[in-house]
Length: 356
Picture (cartoon, rainbow, N blue to C red):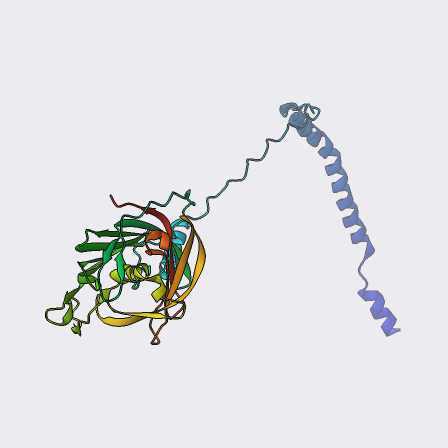
């Protein structure tokens, strides 16, 4: 009983709650009735103050696509200039491979001064061979006939350091029965010029040189002094004893011609001719062996010639081959010189004419 009585006594009274609830509801009703009029006026005023703005958008049909301009042509960029360097390298390579010398009758010419390989000259028409000037018989222990004055021009081909080259040569032979002059000039495009000259007397033993000159970049000379019994050299080389019949590197070929012209039967195949021969720095005995007669087809025409060969006697000697033609008063129609390393020069008659 006491518990139930206590629980009933603690419950709040219902009447005051109902009164409070009714008051709250009534206040909300009054507020809602007054709000529409006020809010409607404010809304209407806002609509009247804010004009309605409209915008029309015209949608145009798509225009036809314009033709795109052609793309510009690609720019051609110039390659870096390399020609000068290539030319320089080519020139250096060619300079290394150019022939070290043109071998003339028996010795080399100066080093080349240009880097271009000379073009092969066009073949020239064969000119008629001029009639040789009258020969000069010489009374001697052995018969000799000195060839008359003549000019011989040669076409030359050669090889040096595995490079082929072309050149030209001219032999001028002049004599008046008492004295003589002989000169050989060798020239090549881009390789310079070399000359060798001999002068002396005509004696009972044939040619007797007094001076031999070898000229390229410098001059070197050999002086024959039979009265003093020696041959001296301007190149400060040691003197050598003079020997009867001594020749130089130009006169030796004319002396051979004089010997065979004087008595061809004296020099059959297999016989030999020995001549003490001086160059610009020394002297040595050149021994030529007579070989068979050959038919030559040269730029100047067809020739019959007797071949003579000088065999090398030492490791560094030159091999010399010379063809003496009776129709040229036994002067050389062809000369070929081969070095110990295989380099060679081959000069073949192109023109034979009377000297100017």
